[in-house]
Image (cartoon, rainbow, N blue to C red; front, side):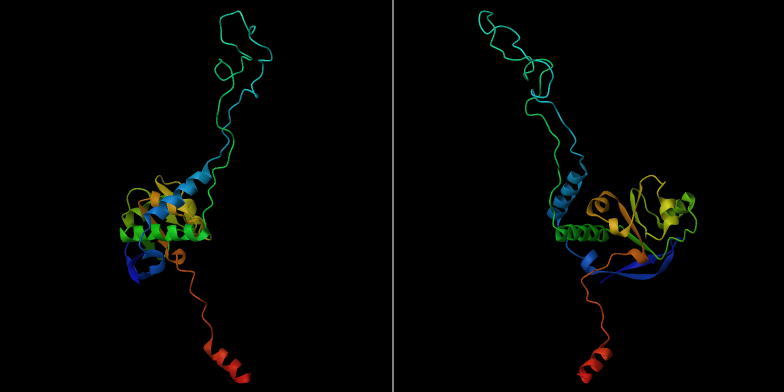
Length: 221
């Protein structure tokens, strides 16, 4: 299990923290991350674009000129696509761009992205943000003490509203809750900052059972 130096709000060492190898220690799957990010961006599209076909354009209810004798090609309506003001041939219509992506693929892609950032040393874990009241100045000082530069993804717990309000006004800083963590946002930012209480862990471990209670139950039976 990989070990990372835990930081405090002043940027000083505050001990060690273990990173779950099943989350931060897998081999990054580039093809999988690409597929999931493509699906995620496609789902953001509104799909409201629309054009009018010749059936939707008003006018053109009569022939522009007679069938024969003019020397021109025969025409049935001025609303045809080759006329100015006519309809659009094969134009875009409202549609959904959603792609079906299995949940297992989404979770595996997120683990790949987190492992990629961990392998580059771009993950910082703090014991707590130490922000009691919303103040952007304190959030800026915290990031400066941690020595991060460029775009930063800050993962804040839902109960830590003061920290979320403090970080959100900083440019190049994206605030996200643990449940909203996704592959695209991880890959789009240079640094990831977690507080210790929201650090992702594997959810596959079975809950611990009381062995003594189990033994007593067997003896009674």
